[in-house]
Length: 114
Length: 114
Image (cartoon, rainbow over all chains, first blue to last red; front, top):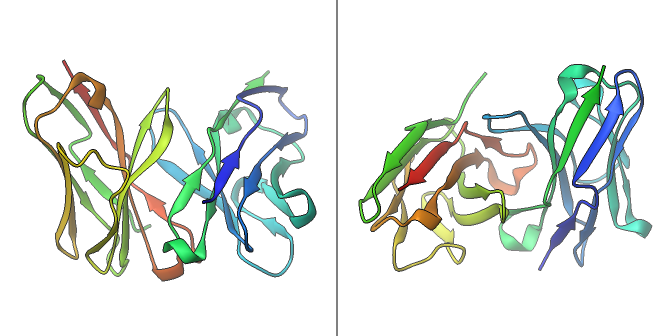
């Protein structure tokens, strides 16, 4: 069965600073990987996804993520954080042989200091 | 933008009462998921459907939960009888086969059982 670990429960960065959120997955084959963002009281919004091809994927809101098979990681990055990026971020893995159901990590709550 | 619509947004009910949550997936999407989100457990997959057929509902307590798709425009999640431990936010998500475009989440139903 697939699993996802997000090692950082909370992260605080200053506005304008760079950001990296970590995600490690466990899955026997090439996974489908996703990052979602959730603002308070809202549903989850898809930031970006990886299925195949270029291991560096670009998403919305200036985010990018890099798939590293050797490290079983799919870390999310942003070069300059804005106050509006404060939210909870979820990494998810989808497995082709399980009907593409998504397994989510525990989430990382991002706080942005002015 | 196409949206997944969930009703009601909020529900407060007494223990033992029946609760029905509804989801209207995006038109044309053939895969529907139900997730539950709590502080303690994070996002848990309860059930999912492909072309209205249930593929996996192993995450649901079978004695009290049931999920159905009476037609392609409506998915329901029912709890009978409800218990305080069912208090959570319930999300519906929809997408296409293989999920290459990711899945779109609704805004959720916040259920409180007192």
